[in-house]
Structures are given as structure tokens and as C-alpha cells.
Amino acid sequence: MRSMRALQNALSRAGSHGQRGGWGHPSRGPLLGGGVRYYFGEAAAQGRGTPHSHQPQHSDHDASNSGMLPRLGDLLFYTIAEGQERIPIHKFTTALKATGLQTSDPRLQDCMSKMQRMVQESSSGGLLDRELFQKCVSSNIVLLTQAFRKKFVIPDFEEFTGHVDRIFEDAKELTGGKVAAYIPHLAKSNPDLWGVSLCTVDGQRHSVGHTKIPFCLQSCVKPLTYAISVSTLGTDYVHKFVGKEPSGLRYNKLSLNEEGIPHNPMVNAGAIVVSSLIKVSAILTFRQVLQYLNKMAGNEFMGFSNATFQSEKETGDRNYAIGYYLKEKKCFPKGVDMMAALDLYFQVSKQSRAKERDRVPSLLLAVDTPLPCFCQNKLVSLFNFHNYDNLRHCARKLDPRREGGEVRNKTVVNLLFAAYSGDVSALRRFALSAVDMEQKDYDSRTALHVAAAEGHIDVVKFLIEACKVNPFVKDRWGNIPLDDAVQFNHLEVVKLLQDYHDSYMLSETQAEVAAETLSKENLESMV
Image 1 (cartoon, rainbow, N blue to C red):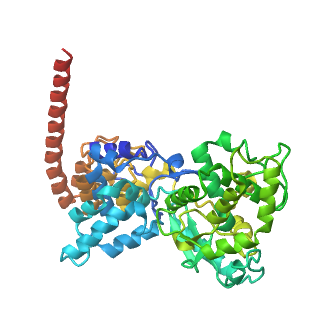
Image 2 (cartoon, rainbow, N blue to C red; image 1 turned 90 degrees about the vertical axis):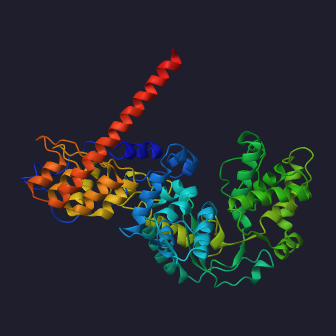
């Protein structure tokens, strides 16, 4: 099956091979019975990190160059269409949101704009056939394929967000705490507002509650400005001026570590020093930081609360004291204007975002709000998000990064059981997940053997038309799928396989001729 092997190479996610299934000789019938759950491909990659760290990344251009773009588009269409000839656009967007991707995702801008044009220009009533669907998704095919194969860091995003929503409702009942009053303008905030937005490293997003009301990033901007300084200046240079260890003191204490520098970038003293490192001039530096923050937010809307900025500038005596303390201890780089650094520190913390549009994971201010309870007690007690939850004693916690029970050594069992039960939907998911559709059990029987023996014409059609499997594979008794169909008198399957034999042999012959011609040309060029 050359096309499916090429698909495996294109995505570098081949299914497991050579596992033992439960099907013997056709005269004995299948050995498995009862129900079975079908899952989307292999087990998810473990651990946190960027998309580049937990799975291989392939561009749509690479897929196109390898000739796999149409094949991926077909498999994606078959997966979403579920046997239908055309896909309603709303069905596609609903399935897309179930993976965690949003239609407003900048990465999908080209796909969404094409679909919008299709609706306006065609008279199909919002229905996409296979050709139109491929035109719309071609520029985003790799991202979409990874999403529908459930290869994102959280495979079952709907289940995960269901847990988050329940925790959100529990925390909603907590009315303790108070609105931050250290800045007069913040003291006017509505204490009844409560919202949560999350974003994974793969761009899966979920929002619940009051998430459309803008809020100031405040201290949540500290890790962002630290990231900007490290990416532009380098880790070694930055940590000449700021440490890495916790202080054990309040975030706004006037204190330095044993080396005479702020303890870390997350306390006010460290954040002020970091702001001084990325300056060029007061105005230009702010623009540069704003560009970085906009990029982190997917170039979506980011405002600036001038009222809050002026309010803190007039009343931020503590931060001014920290600034003068740092200046007296010579913590700033040479030639840095302390007031310019403080202005930048005040400005960047007054960036205004709506939580729903926040692309930065879990950036909610955890000061005097129910959020510490939400994260520390509820979220961490349910999921293994704590630093030490990978230890043996935390095994009972949920790990949303794992696929629900799918293990590689059961791939062939699930594949052949799907063929036996006539579950074409499961087979579509396996094909889209780059599973080898020619996998054999211990009797060397393939999914096509099982489908032919059972007379499942739809399964046979999918395997030979969409997957182009080899119809001449022999089992341990020397039977090919056509022999099984003849033995059990499935005449429609017999006719279908006979026709496919001719076309398959023709394509094989053409491929051999092309390979031989190419080999001769290579030899002639070498001579």
C-alpha cells in the first residue's frame, strides 16, 4: 500500500506493527466478541512543551511536495463526512471546535476566508463536496490533520473542558477575598466578575464566564517581559542582572540576593530590572514590547489602560522606592535611566486584554481572587499538573495528555475488529491517523480478509478505494481476501475484488515501469 506508507512517512506517526489479533481461519470465524471502544490513532505524546517538542512538525508545503496533500485532504473529508457526499460548513466548524481549535485562530485564517467566499459565491447552501473541501483546507491541511487525529497535547479536549467547567462552577460560589486596592483605579473593579480562559501549547482554547471584559495584565506580564528579554538578549546576559531562585519574601520587598541582584524576574525588583534591560528609549522600548505582546496574542486586539497607568504612576510609591534602592545598589546596566525603566514597567503591566482572546496560557491575576483555590485545590487535585505529580503516588490523578486507553499494541486488534463489525467510521479514523491498513494478525490476516469474509461491502470499498490496500496478501493458509469472499458466497464482494485486482495489477505494472525507467536514466547519467 504505497500511498498509505507515504502518508506514514509524511507525518512520521506510523501505527504499531505485528501485534497479535484475535482472528483465525475464516471457517472458524472471529474469536473476539462484545463491545470495543475506538480511538484516534496512537497514544499521545507525554509531557509539556511547545508543539515542536512533543511531536514532529511538517509544513503544508512539505506535504504538497511529497504528493500527500490530496491524500490528506481526502482522508480528512472522509473522516468528517462520515459517508456523506457533502459536508455542511457548520458541521466542519463544530467538529473543529471539538478539537480545541477556534475558527478565529490566525493559523486558520486562509481556510476560513475561503469557506466564507465559497458560501457567498456558490449556490450549494453552505455544503462542501470533496473538491471544494480540499480547496478550502489545502493551506492548513497539516494542522487540521493533526487536530482531527487527536495529536494535540490534550487529545480529548471536550472531556478536559468539561472538568474545567465543573471546577469553574464550584469556584464561582467562593465570594471571599477582595478587589486589589493598591491602585485606586483597580479598586473600582467589579468583584462579581469571574472568568477563566485557557490555551494549550497547540493553540487549543476554551473560555467560560466573564471572558469578554478587558482586564489589565498587571503582574501576569512579568513572565512575558522576562521571555522578551531572554529571547532578545540571551539568558546569560539577563541573569547577570537578575537571579533565578525564589526569595521567600513578598513580591514587593526591598531585598536582593547574596550576589546583590534581585532574586528572580517575578518579584517587582526583578521585573523593574528586566524592563531596564530591554529599553532603547522610553517610547521606542514600549512599542517594541507591545509588538512582542501582540505577537504572543496572535495579533489579536490588545489595548492599553491609560487611566490605570496614570493612577499607578501617581500612587506607586513602593515601586519608586524599589527603583531608587536598585539604583543605589547599582543593579541597573550602565547608562540606563531609572525613571524610563519604571515607566516601561508601569506601561506594560497596563496592557488590557479580554480573557477570551488571550493566547497566553492561564494568564489570570491570582491575587485576592478565587483563582488560587481554582488552580491549587481543585485543578491540581484532579489533574497531575503539579511538579511532582509524575511520581508513583500520584498515579490516580487524571492526565489529559493521554489518549483515552488507546495503546499501540492493540492497534491491529482494533483495526481488525472494526473491519469485522463493519465500522467504517473507525476505519476512517485509523486511516487518517496514518495507521498501516495492511497490518496482519498472527494468522497473517488483514482487515480486508476479515471484511471480505464477513461480506461488509462498505468496508471493502473503503479499504480498496480510499486506502488502496494490497488485495493479494496471503494468510497462513494461503488465502487472499477474494478466496474468503468466494468461500462465504458474498457475490458483491467477489465482483468488487475481481475488478480491483485488475486495476491494482495495472497500477503496480505502471509503477514498476516508471521505477525501471528512472533507474536507467540514473545509470546513464552516471556513465
